[in-house]
Image 1 (cartoon, rainbow, N blue to C red):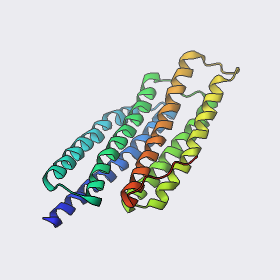
Image 2 (cartoon, rainbow, N blue to C red):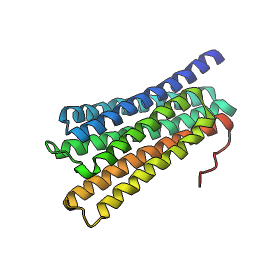
Image 3 (cartoon, rainbow, N blue to C red):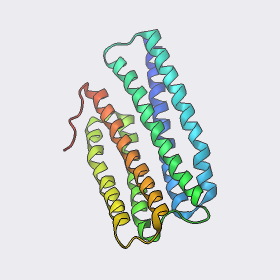
Length: 217
């Protein structure tokens, strides 16, 4: 019975890693679609979001079922409760990639990103992918040390977000209110994606240590 129980725990962990992998592809493809006004790629990201949702629903159902059947305690219970919260964060990250892709689709055949913000959005996409990459490794290896690094890594996304807002508020902005709203939303999507990565990393730290990580000030 215990062997079967731990096999199911391993299966839940594998599903979380699968979600993280799909989220990385979605965010990378959404950024490419946005910067290149690639409608086909945007549609691919939008359609693929349902796969992430399906995995989350299945994972949560399995987790709750396992909790009900096995009544786990100590670290096993911590693993299951943490899995529920991590799956919600990953699903939301997938939604944010979906929103980026929808922005690309909405402005097609034009590019939604003005030339002066191309570098900033490119960097935000790069940082998001790097965070998801590190997060996947942290989740797979239950690496509490690297989990703490992700909150510091998020500082780069916050810096880029501030740069974007500063550009929008500059008197030289010439693309109008509609484009400013587009860019404000896009900046928020990337910034929130990074925040969810931080949230998951903190949950991994709790899973490993049984303690909450102190916030980085």
